[in-house]
Length: 203
Image (cartoon, rainbow, N blue to C red; front, side, top):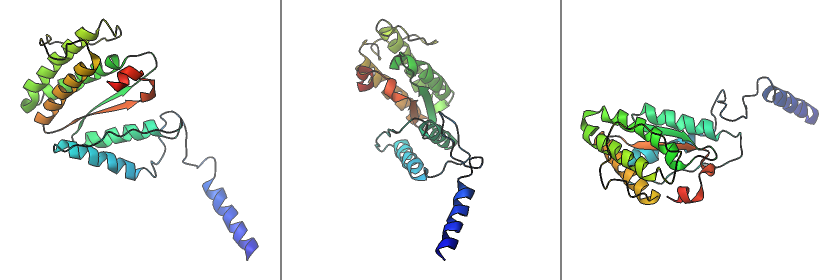
């Protein structure tokens, strides 16, 4: 009986560990044939976003793990899930030697332009675009890599102090108000967050 059992186990292992059929495909951003074992985390993020949509508070989610275990793929799937339910999203990747404002500004511009197409959010989205213009202009001296084309003039006193922490907060609040007016939320997905410099990450 013991030998029969061992033989059975070997057959099962050979079936599931076949290198050709093995669905485990480690690699940077390579989608597997099946995203298995991540339902609980996807649901946690979905609940977090839906709480925000109705005005409740929720904590951000930070995923950590070794390279190639599927963080980027999971991040992209969560973004797809969110977009499918009417959520507005931004996805940025934080490479080395790029400032956080430079990463966020172009993506925020696109998201705010999308929100400005919704009649209920139009005015607040345009106000947010003016805040973004002031934000980019005020911080250009500190962060020379900010490049964003804005069709709106900055609004004086709106996210233009030149202090990253206060200006970023003001900008996010303005963008959040625009999303709220559109009865949605704006979710930011950042890949490779470890490359953001400490003082920028603190802001």
